[in-house]
Length: 266
Image (cartoon, rainbow, N blue to C red; front, side, top):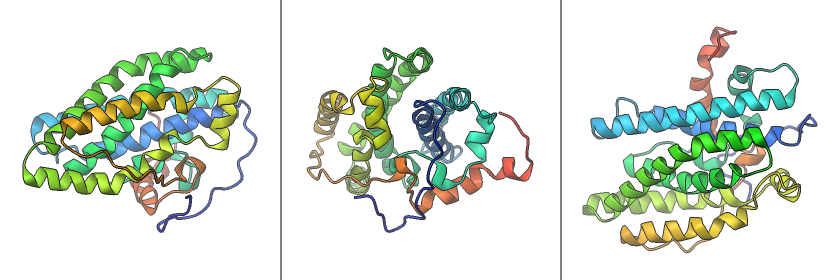
């Protein structure tokens, strides 16, 4: 299902890319940037200082990864745009991040569930990309996968702690899972672009990632004493430019400085 109640508009027709990898690398960059910004919103508001710092550090890891992708995307496009242009001077419908990462933070349990769903995909995708045929993409993946493993360990441990914790933590976790699980399917559902890249051998088959992802999710949820959600429904659209209203508000804050004082650099 592509349409959402809070959908803001449809994506414009994309101009032909100079390199078939360009839109995918841009998608990876957008995904890391948007989630990094969401996590940075916790800075100064974490439940305890240690976790406040942990959230900020994960945000910085993702921001660094986003920069590497944007720099490579700008080179692949070859039209003179810079990493700053791609990150800060595009409209919401031009972003290609999945819907999951633009969802608001909510409470701590909400953030943990969103992070766990993303980390479980992100880690396994990077593991495959680091041995892929594109040397630059493989190098970025190799540099990022160690951090991604820490992120997955952190969010997995917190999901277990909240699920097997107090009645209130369990109630909040159950509510977060009921809200966010439907966004996980978009991560592993290929778009036409991703299917084409998979057929060209430039992108791993997402179906091959599923057994490891599902095994890890089942293990963590069992440890958390939380039943594995049964509904396979997947809310989609973000990777094709159809976003929730949340992305527009996020970008208004994220892009404010660059649009107010043009020409700033990272």
